[in-house]
Amino acid sequence: MSIPTSRDKEPANVFIDIEKCNGCGLCVEVCKDFSFSIVDHKVVQSDKPVFGCVACGHCMMICPTGVIAIEGRTLSPVELFDLPDKSIVPTYESLLAMLQHRRSIREFKDIPVEYEKITKILEAAQTAPMGIPPSDVHVLVLENKTQVHDFAVEFSTFLKSVRWMASNWFMALMRPFWGKANDEMMHSFMKPVFDVYIDSMEKGENWINYDAPLAMYFYGSPYSDPADPIVAATYAMIAGEALGLGTCMLGGIHPFIQYGKKARLFREKYGIKYPSREGLFVIFGYSDVHYKRGVKRTFADIHRIR
Image 1 (cartoon, rainbow, N blue to C red):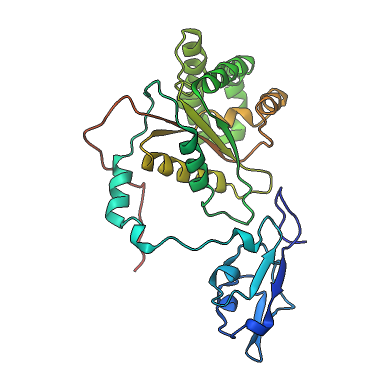
Image 2 (image 1 turned 45 degrees about the horizontal axis):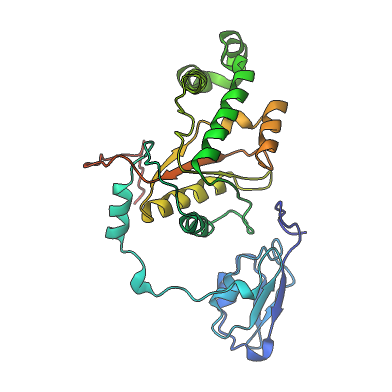
């Protein structure tokens, strides 16, 4: 058995057309499973792979004569495509300019996001790197303002049913177990989130997902690398920006729908297949505000070893 995911638990199959092999050894160089070796100037499969083929596809993508075919774990040679010409790849300067223009947008025009742009966002997000192929990222897509608003209403109702989690007695009870930092976050962030989300919806104001024209929720499975959904969500956000949309990441929904029977029922209603260690909502739409200036951000620390 290879490294398991929710999609496949078996190693992929490797096929080699040895007669066409020129013995260049590029596949040996890029395969980090040590699945290949060169014998008599021809590539052969190793008898001591580390995990078994996880279908990263590197060997197929680099082979100059196309002698390697991988089948399994959702990969096959039909998935190969020629890389776009480097002349259309953005420069660092153009990429940085786009990232500097991006702001977290929560004010949207009442204009739907076109189906074609939704498809392009998902296409771009699927190029995100992952821990182990095949990707174990799952995506819930709320494709219009009505769906987004209805989700917020349901989420607010769900929060009301678990509002005791923000009570003083519960936080005092949990303080010894979740530590100082989590206790500070509960008092300064999570407790106000309950109040703002629930109270604003009762007043007819949606501070949960801002009635955006489009929302996507990226989450993982019990097998996935915790970083995978976050990376995919980031790619989706950048794609939305490139398509002329305003975007915003929302981190206040995911933690509440992970644990307990009521959270499970909420997930099931929306076809969310798994609880996930990490997950993120991204909202999209045509911005109703336009910023004239940016502001420099910094990391907490950069320690460069030279």
